[in-house]
Length: 494
Image (cartoon, rainbow, N blue to C red; front, top):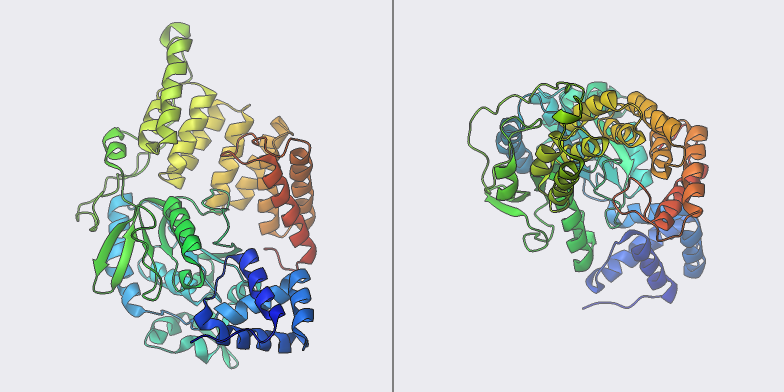
């Protein structure tokens, strides 16, 4: 039995929340949701529901407080210990066998709330000997929760449950609180991201080529249509062979995206398998990592070959040693077709055989779907061979940003813009880098440049060097970032 809203403005508030965030609350939860709204109203000092609706429609912080009230509840360190045991005993060893010992593991805590899950994952990676070879991206829709997560200070409520013993060696007592050790904090980057919006996967935000995604106790807040869209985007964000873990309370995803479903005693997990055609197309000497096991079970326990060492190709020889222009165009078109249908290894192999700027850029893009480290090495070689290509310097900046090498990313973005000031997407990427580094003035200027360049184009015109991004949408994104910078507190960068 469900109850009706006590005031139409409360229903309007939930519709507003859904339109802004994708969150959905069924009729059976109406009574609890209304109580949550009332608590948020009390904190805001507002008794009239209509006035509160007007507040959250205009005040991002008030809306954020409501998000926290209605979504953040049960979260603590090493929640669902059986899943972390599965990660330790099965998932991480499988990733390391398949990717090679030199691979930097990229993990994503999607919907990280106040950070306990992300830090738990970082501790696990640290204990598995991956210091310096792993990075955890942690994202959430609540900026208040992200602020708490970055502070890394927790009370006893976060230390309940059987997983508390695992985290205590990495906590430093401070009064009646405990602060996560710096060695753990350095492994995690916290960023704002709304899973319900079509803004990922993206190399620029680090949501691309992910080895492991934890998206637990998040999907329960979305309606079926949004769950399907999120499942497909999470699938696309995974590297081939990558793993996705959801919570036991989350809706099943087997029919929402082409996942391989792995049923275990610890729960149901999902993988992105490698298409057979892609595996077959991978040449023995391809730079990158061994192909993922296409089955639902972990890859066989064999030692993966070490990633090929980067090497600089010799400069192109005279015309007689280079394929005819028509042959090059044909081969490049075939490589583009491979890339479009997801045959990244095939595209990389074709492009590597060609000595043109366009082929070098295509090869970098293909590798970015397979291994960010290998793609970065290829981009370094390509920019050395073609130093006047603004596209190659831009691609390098995006890859370096994804790897957390912000200083180098800044230099690469500035080189791209020195060569071509009209690259709107390079201005936008530079803004992202500078914002993350705390340079709000520089970030605002870069976003402004991106906005003005896009605003001068037809709204539906595709912005150069993007994957089909229309100018109107990128202009809106740049404007949103500028607005957000205006509302950040002093010292807050993200």
